[in-house]
Length: 234
Image (tube, rainbow, N blue to C red; front, side, top):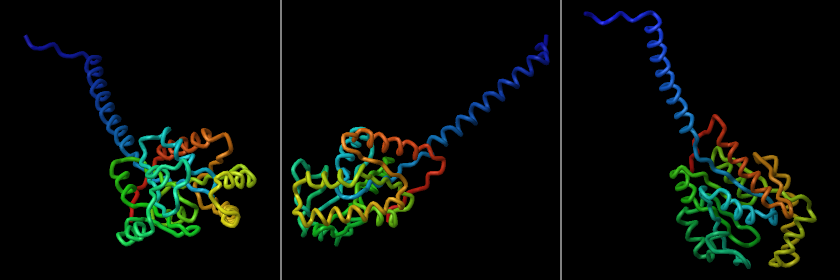
């Protein structure tokens, strides 16, 4: 005897199952593409001298350890509590100039008589490994990086008040009064530059964790954006 002829309801059910399986496959493929479209980003963290950039980065390393943190090189003397390779890479002037000649820095400048430079290779390596890159730099350096690296995300750290900022600068006890006043005057002018940044984060006294949480939220939001362009390092 031949096989029984499927009833209309059985045929409809089989067609339905086939269509459902195809929708699963197509949809899962699309979801996978959406997930893989998430690209590593370059985040620039800047702000006036004394606003607490080093403290923010130190806490951000704990909250967001998977990122690539680019450590600025400098010729200035090491301060109490600083660690070479963590807060800065401390170089002699001869070493710094040699690295300039080798084109090791994507950006460098002379600030208050000391050289500062952002190394290129950690940025390139971090992006190649699929890691977000976080660069701490002064306000002038941030402007240069925005021009040289397209599609960065820049965050401006600001104090709650000018008296609070002056007190932080004084607490360092590393600058003579003339240098201190010059830094404070420059900081006032640098606050005007906030309009060129993508985000502003207040780093208030006693609220460091809140500032770091805001930065983590910004990073999360940026990775939820549909359009994430490629980053090209010159």
